[in-house]
Length: 165
Image (cartoon, rainbow, N blue to C red):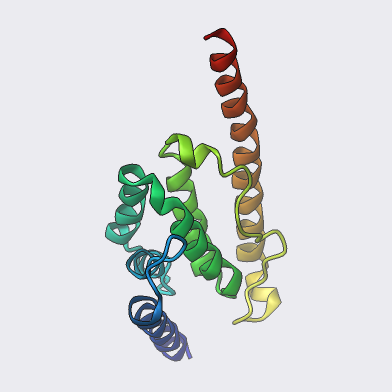
């Protein structure tokens, strides 16, 4: 059964990457290459983490603040569709890394752009997954509160700078 779940997860990721790279139009709010990197960084593989793809996403934001909107779109799409605790945790870890960039545009996010406050793994029985589900919900709450606290501080500093000039 574990082999079947791993194969199904790999197939889902592969299909999502193909759809992102081939069918996603490159617009101001969508970027197929960035979405593919997000999918690779948040893969269903519970044994490994694709640090290279996660690092590419973080570097994208550091180098090009214009990429924030496509990043938020791609990550929201991934997080709102998932029923896998592995993908949810990897997505939260990716968002945590993005928040640590401390670029001015990232600080403007305010709250997390997706909601995992009622997350529940849909692939296994609830009695086996309650610990993972609770961890995902707690990690989401921690990050969401952190962004909510960072945003007002950033705005206050910006207002104070403009008042004294």
